[in-house]
Length: 388
Image: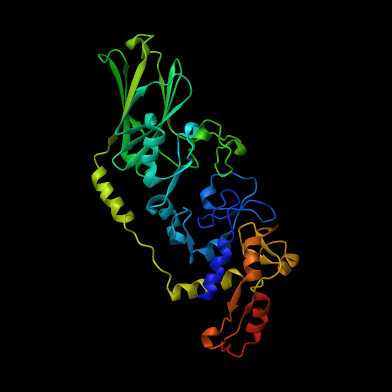
């Protein structure tokens, strides 16, 4: 158990160089030639010129638990459950307020999000149906709550077009659509209704409203200004108003309403989702799993060429196999896959190799030796408990 804690503590000290979160979501990618900079799977869509996946760290991490990224949550989450916990289960989940242009409290807990909207942005918050007049200049952002679901809407109006971006925080938005109704503020006799419009799945990093407006400078947002304002890939409903406005009078101010229309299968799907998501408990790691983790760590800390424990500099081949310093000087290609051995070092794994203290491979046979890898290799070769 002590070994597992040492491994876990070493991994927890390694952070994503983009979002500064613990490396608990795959894929873990080296984005620098020297191996010093790593990005986590939360930042997978942030493109960088150099990318090399660190399979060794992922293989070690799969037996460990990691802290939740949300400040007030004290749960330790198994590797394979981190994404589900952060996206669906955590009661302390936070979100950046979408009404960025008039918001003082940038980060808001989801459980207090409705209160925040009512207090800070009452003109932008609606229950079930969104109703307003078309904005005259810049995009206007709204939040609609339907039952327990939140939807974000951006409306941009020019003299001839209406652009609408509609997104939901749930991962089952394919089951819903929205209905748009346009009419004159002076006369409801004539209206235009556009049905069955698609709803995007909102991702806070990929669909940031500041990124869409080209005003975001966050390095972990793939479409921010610092990442070149790469266009956001969302479905936006563009409506030509040239044939609609004459129905209401060219000078008439237009009002609009939007409501969410559920799919017929909503009830049964909600039951399925609730059964799989709600009330899910985090399992504890038992001693057998800890033992498996330590055995896996031994394998990951062995050179793929000579199969000895690795110390000093550790390198990767192009496909992610690890190679010790001595074998790199003797081989230009990896003997496992025949790809070129890179010049970049696997610094996170090297840090583990330098710091970790392991029991002897033959501890099951009664050996009580523990030590760092530089001593462990020589000891195991001559261990009196080696009855293999």
